[in-house]
Image 1 (cartoon, chains in turn blue, yellow):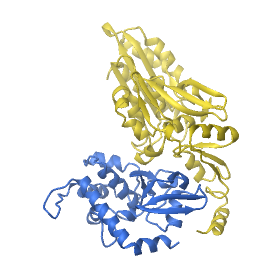
Image 2: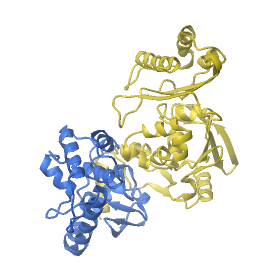
Image 3: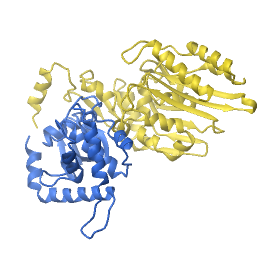
Image 4: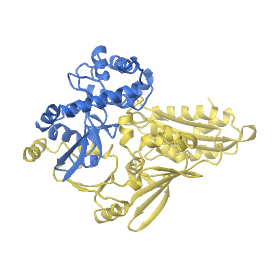
Length: 192
Length: 301
């Protein structure tokens, strides 16, 4: 069965069993191994992706349900040489330890901030309530997200922009670069 | 793509995982087609948001089954607010319900109940229709639906039915739905008068991603001199299905809420609920905590 949907703004076609998990399609068929499997029960959030901009557990979605929809994985947030402000904050504040929960944490946080969610500690803890960190590094993760959210941002012209705008800008820029440098994304995708 | 190795891998795991190979997936494009396909394949498992079904599938328990994927039924999504209530499509997600303006304003317990389900990832996928059809004793939206006296509308090749929410649940993970019958709408009327008191309390091990040990929803209308005009209270997770507290409500309605009456009502709770010991909690804990929730609510604490 052929299923067409967008992954990180690029249209992709999956041809295979319609009930394969979206998580496995992303990792095995498209080579996007940034998305991790933790519990396989929708409890830990390691497999969090954005489906039409909303955080969801990709281990609980058969690929047929992604038809015609837009998927974003952690790969869309940044490239190693061009990290998003959220990823930078995780690096600076020690928000990543073993790294297994990090892609999910980043996407839950990005979705929360992009949607204009509140940036107090309680709201951030609620936003990442579906993501477990087995290193128990929550303090640093929350700090990282707050740092990314709080940092005063100025564009080149010196205008302050909101966190929401900033993350959207980051995303647009990175996706643009990602498609320009399609070598990296494409070669990753076809390597199975 | 590596179909051959793939099925080999699953075979080696001895059926401990979901194997997409051999799954039959029916993907109706509209409600009429869904009903027809379901009547032709009554053994199929209806799949909505998948937050519960996919957990079972991932563990390998549903291999080689037929799935009726309802996700393409746009007609069954969405929430429509009318003058006297809301009509909720069965594919409305918990997130959509908890943020709907009319529900937030007129049915706040339902909004709160939906916002207490799972975590944001689950609430974006899990649907109210799927939650109801799944009929878990711990369904968090059920006590709120029970005190708002929601109606579940179903459809099958034989026709349409409308059932009060409490009559839909038949036991642990059992419903009154017949083979080939699907939920097509959930109607919840706004209370004629806003209640004087209302409560929703979910007690679990943590705030997010927790299955409740007990979950209660209550509405109370008071008349002159503190006389109870109407009490509606329901508990979940403390019986095979969600329970309206019939004995408690009958003892309290029409009487003045005195300390003695509150104690009598709390003593009657044992007639209405029947909690058990299980992996999440004990019978005793559930009884004591549920009673405390009821007492605090009646006392206005």
